[in-house]
Length: 333
Image (cartoon, rainbow, N blue to C red; front, top):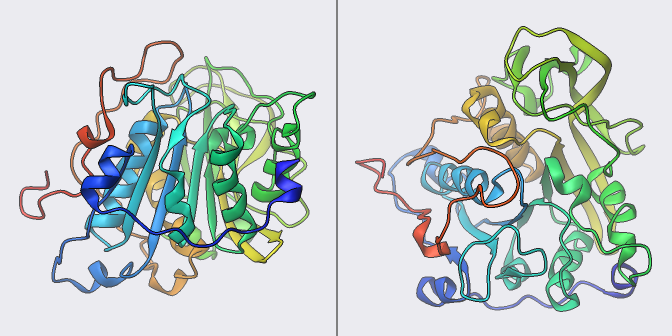
């Protein structure tokens, strides 16, 4: 059982930007924007692990990476599911290239769904989780892996996400519906919620998320809404849609932020972007750097994602180097 037998690995060296592109992941040096906020992330490296065939993590996570890199000075790496030809292919469940970058990372952000990675790739993710470093998860990370009951790594299907993220996959309220989000009054002063509206609507349909892990503390709750647009009737029980969590790994205790939201349309809502970025800052121990109005969450570069859905709905024939993370600070592109 890989989760039980692997200890944290040694820190692997990083490739230069040219070599990184060849291996299917992208890494750039943050530009000097000459502003105090641009120094917040200096010296910290965040690795995004993407690979879901439904919610366009190959587009949503680079959008967040661009903000973190270009506005706040973090070093960022995005790892993608790739075809044998080197094209981004979220339908490819057994190959995420570039996970070696986790050996030098300060944070891991996971947005995968039902992956079945080979042991040599999975090892990098498991090692990082056991390191005690901060972790963030989005939506389908509650079911990041699917190996099946007879596989040696089947504990990754349910036990691992429940322990690491605070919840596993249970069920949802139907893809034709959406969610009204509310801040829990007793948690309103939490730094992750700075600048987040007390209530807002997202396209994501509500996930069942109760009961959470005993180490998890909910921040926001969601109410299932009939239909995909605001204003529909509520139905069913409310469930947490974002929480903080503590994962006790083999080599340390990790701060974890998780949200079950993450539909590509959710990120057009500023409160969702602020929540995501605030959660990243908090998990990194940077809560004192979160302003009262929340982390600035304006888009940097283009964000025009394909809609959620299975099959061939993702953007075709793109390689990692076709999705720039560094943008020109003057033109915004």
